[in-house]
Image (tube, each protein chain N blue to C red):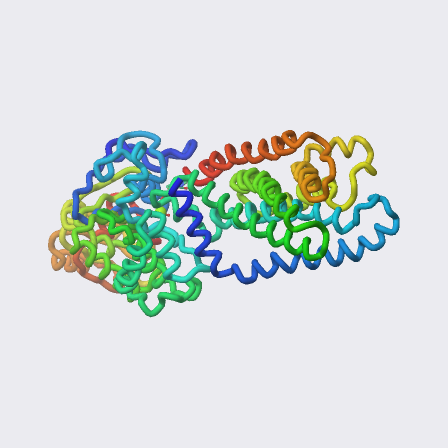
Length: 303
Length: 254
Ligand SMILES: Nc1ncnc2c1ncn2[C@@H]1O[C@H](COP(=O)(O)OP(=O)(O)OP(=O)(O)O)[C@@H](O)[C@H]1O
Ligand SMILES: [Mg+2]
């Protein structure tokens, strides 16, 4: 997959502004970014359902503008919103979708139990979708995307809205897919999801890519090694912010705490202690993608 | 083309869930309408003898045969199509696969064709049992009736695709269907109406369909040559078939 100067405009609004990226076969590639960054617009262009406004795009060595149907035949798509027919059974949803690909009836019928097994929905085969939980529906949509044994799967926020247990189940299924050599493209605004799943990712903000690399590279480049989070007693916040000037290599001031970056947490801790600023608590942790994001965009991902 | 058949198959799989109820109403409705209006109201009308030798039942049944195809065509092209865009989102789902926009339109239209045909055959059989006209004559009218259903369904599909909100669909029924129903000659011969209303009636596709159905089932002479009636219905169908894919594209591709 190769994108150069990929652009999408809706009237006056530029949703994706001339972005470049490559995705290699077999890797898990992520788009990390806040609401409205342009992740879905990018995915829809890759999925050959939304025409490009500008730039070039090659998906599975083809051009979506001319070979849309051929590309879609080899892709699996998990849209941001679960588009399942709630009135139909789990099996009927899968059957109809498989037939859209022109798979022979017998082959679709053989494939359905495998997919239900994969999604751990075997005992729900004949249930109407309406009665499934959010996590089950999401797993159904993921299973559906695999019916045509795609070589590449697009997942738009695969676990948004799921509880931690359901998310881990989905992650587990996605790891299983990568073991089978399937290329995965996913969008997320969860840092832990990006760290867990992605070999490489791009950080998107306001329609552009602001950084690219593996999670470890991004953390090393943009956040440093160690992080000290300082919280203040009620009423002392303002004093706290100003009193900590000069400590660490960089600081981020959030509503409820100050985050101090540096290479040696012990040194940071003692500097804060000696600054005389009244502190409620201090927490040392390793730098994460959240810090990368904060640095690059000046905001937190999930407010 | 095979894409349209796959969309049709999807519709049929979904229909399996509701077909019992829908087949029952397909037979019950004609029975209700023909006994209440055809026989009940007809016994009053026939005493007035406005229709000559023709019974009101035969007159009304032949009109309603076409009118219910209009109703089915419009009904199936309104809310179920809106559902594909907005509620079940089956159109969005299908577009992530090799299915093309024209497959969605013509697959769904073929499903409507089957539904209109089923309803027309059911109505023709019930009307024949009521003695409105001969079964064979009624069945020869079925193709005309199906043409009428599609002449409504395709333009309405295009209209539905162009509307964001379903309240527009209710307006179609209220301000489109009901006046057409009254102006079509289903319930009474139009020669009793003022000339300008009669002229307006010639714009109503249903009026053309009913002229044809009456010619086929009642041996009545149609107002215009057959080719003109068939041509006018076909015109609506073709305009709808050209517009619907465009409107679907505008709605689905962004
Ligand atoms: N069909 C559309 N018509 C007009 N504007 C659109 C359309 N789709 C998206 N946009 C706009 O494009 C911008 C990017 O939207 P997009 O859905 O790609 O963001 P996103 O990164 O997926 O956000 P989220 O995390 O909320 O899903 C937004 O400002 C959005 O309002
Ligand atoms: Mg999105």
